[in-house]
Image (cartoon, rainbow, N blue to C red; front, side, top):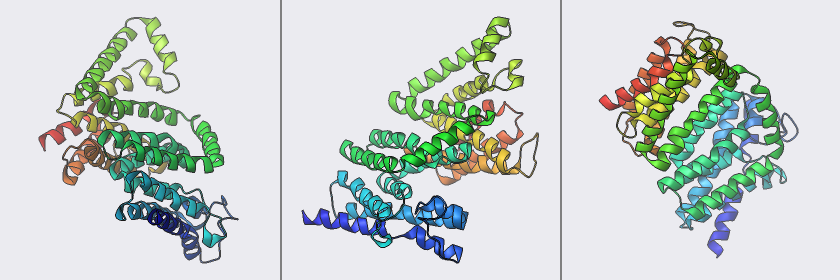
Length: 388
């Protein structure tokens, strides 16, 4: 009885260490009170605003280590698995009401992320890619991105046996606690999301992200055979609609109106990128399990990062309007996606194989005419993984 209490109190003290405040003062060269300046939150986001991106990243890493250390201590001392998230929760409580800051602090989002990394590392890192993609897409909305992604993290962990049901419940309690504390910030994120949705590129990429349902839900829940069948049927249906579009004017008008929020003007008279995307994904699904699912994630995220990084940071032109910065973004996210998805799907892919497949997908994305990269990226990535 005494051991759990001592561990939980220790985790509270670990969370109370005002790492963000320390980093802010070191990098700013002055006495900064995070609770009174900027967003008035004693956390990594406020450090980013007041002391710069490098300081913000160091603060986030340090706060995340609180959650990692707290969960690790619970594991090391032999507490039951369902108590490990509670150790992370106590670190979050310490971060929010720090004994060293007169019981003030931040929301504890970074500490919660750290706790998830310690509990289910591959699931948390893979979902971290989705959060980073959300930040890049919307230009912020950190808490909203975390709120949208964390259920998938738990579903993956339960499906893979990384955690049991009781541990998943206490982990869910930890997340809901942080979201409740950050309700005002969550509300602000919703406002920022509505503003971002006024941009055509954001709407288009959000629409494409919905295709992650294929590798994220259909494949894990129903198996690779169903995953392949659904993709082939979807590609066939899309191709049939394209045929009707070019032969029945009313069908074309209906399709144009339906896809107006996310469509491109030139797609009114040419085959749509949705159809090429489904055809490319269906071709990739013909490769052995789970290569097609991994390659589909590479296509979705790689293409998105190429476009978003090129639009926001592109300075060095390449071929056909593509930029070096966009290609670098595509390469990095494709490599990480390939490697982390292989861990989730228990498929042996080395870092070298991930690098090679990512490089092939990036080259194809850079060289393919606009729209055709949806047809070629997944297939080429799948071919490279299969051959290697």
